[in-house]
Image (cartoon, one colour):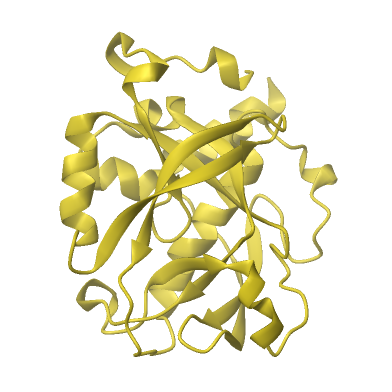
Length: 223
């Protein structure tokens, strides 16, 4: 299914939706739970995309994630300060996906993200797999000098978000994923401290999805 053919929930026109860049724990399954929308409907309104000139990093403290640091995005111009010269997933583009939210969903997500005290919304230019740019929003962490290495549960959630880039339409064949640490069911990425710009570690793991997500991936693969 091409991106231009993605059906919209409740006959909403695309112009009525706000594309929200999802790069941390907000993978499709979590969006479904938080917004109380069936996963199938969430997947209908997702599009794979990247944010050029940004990288994923972590800072602050999240009570929801075991008092460890949640994710944010920072300009990749800060990469000169990194211990690692080039991030695996994005020296020039940061791959993830966007979800088209109604105004009601956006208000609900604001509460989950702790706007305006924990996160703030910022406009961002996103690029689809077809190279077409479109405007969206991203939740950016309010400045916080604290860093606690993210929990295993949180990093696992981030992994699910990252890999959605590959299986969301237009789907990338697993054989065309050119990363030695990534497939539909495994992921690897660097953990960067947003307060210093330094690499703190690496995360690699297998990914376990809800059954509905597995069906979505595999049914599309073998149709």
